[in-house]
Image (cartoon, rainbow, N blue to C red; front, side, top):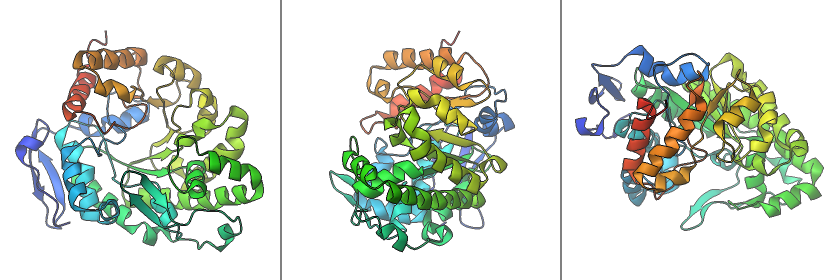
Amino acid sequence: MHGVRRPAAADLPRGVEYGRLNPSGDTVMTTAMFDRERSERFLRACRLQPVDRTPVWLMRQAGRYWPGYRALRERYSMLELLRTPELALEITLQPVHAFELDAAIVFSDILLLLDAVGMGLEFVQGEGPRLRHPVRDPDVIERWPDPDVRHTMAPTLDTIRAARRALEGWCPLIGFTGAPYTLALYAVEGRGSPDFQFAREWMAQHPEGTQRLLQRLAQWVGEYMRAQWEAGAQAIQIFDTWAAGLSVDQYFEWAGRWTRWAMDLADVHGRGPFIVFAGRSGHLLECLAKLQPDVVSVGSDIPLDIAWSRLGYGVAVQGNLDPSWLLRPPEELDAAVCDVLRRAGGRPGHIFNLGHGVPKETDPEQIRRLVTRVHTGFSVA
């Protein structure tokens, strides 16, 4: 796609000669030093296969902490960035240009799927995402159209296609979506919330309407995941952050069964690594394992070694540095990274990540330091 900034050599990780435009007009990364181990490190770890070093990528690695993103945000609205594939592609590639990350994740937002059925997504300064038409009457759920996700989510799917071509031979591309339960909370609450108290009370008062809402969302999530794989995503992460507020007894009825429905619809096990993330969900680990994902992304509320022993070593794990360590002095960050690596013990199947997203106050040099420490196995012995 034309209009994507050509990265200067100084912007690229060691070994990359330049970013050039191929005949189709897409930015691609070229190098004299690519090797199969490096380009497949993340995917191999997802499959519990040995790797030459621990792979690392970070949730919100393309976000507000990065000066390049902030510069674009000053020029364009959030919806323009999300709905313009050229811009979303640039944001997707920025952290891969800057750091030696082992995977890219497409720049998008989980709430775009709700916008596709007419809920009116907008981003309010100082407030974040908001839906102009949240669910109040259960009857409205039946009146929603069935969106053709290949049409309604076309900008994100186009970004995936372009990013896959741009990253070929460099690192894999991760797609993502919100899980039905977390999307349902947003659909009812209408905005982000510390606890989604209104949405939880609404669901308790309208149990039949809630189940229908979850069923419809699961259908769309499954179709959207399938479309992302077909567009070129090599792995998909499903975000069910707010399922962490459920008890073990509640999880299957309200969240797990509908995530499983979406997984089956997308035929996740026949396509590529599937990652499930449910925030600070140490109490739900056994529930997450029953979904049979390839990877469980572990929150920061439980030590990684304990989480992995409870999940079982037949599943890969991702995580789980507390993001707040990125705001601490460098030597303290080093020690925290070392602790996570030590707990993983060099066992095949660990992907280094955070327990949640990169804080917006993070110094980019801390990201560079983290990636270097992970790749060198800093003091892991």
